[in-house]
Length: 187
Image (cartoon, rainbow, N blue to C red):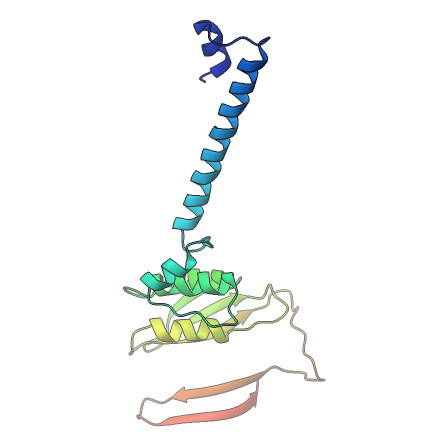
């Protein structure tokens, strides 16, 4: 590796005992560290998932309008989702969407005609799937639909309010072109 002290000592312009030479070398080191820190900050700003200073510019480019209640992370996720929504919805995109919200997911294709299942590993105390559901609904093509499954191998699901089984809100689209939305059903 390049040794600046050795190089300067060989040229005769630098002396370890000279306070001016040591001061100049420390100034160069600080400038180099500032340059490297600036380079790292620029790398973070160019990536949508870590941008903070340039987030307004990215939102303008992607035509994304943040809500007043959004955190920086919510805005970053909205930008990522806008970019990922372009093109074909693949299982890897679905897994990536789920990982943005901290879910470990697996996609099972063709559960029913034109329907796939997103299996989520239960690693969280509460599952809030509304945002993930909205993203998948927006990005999937019109002929495709999804459903969620929660894998809980350790039986760690706990129910509050004295429930013994989970409650699901169900809406279905039958093959005979009728739509029905049900209330709450115990599983």
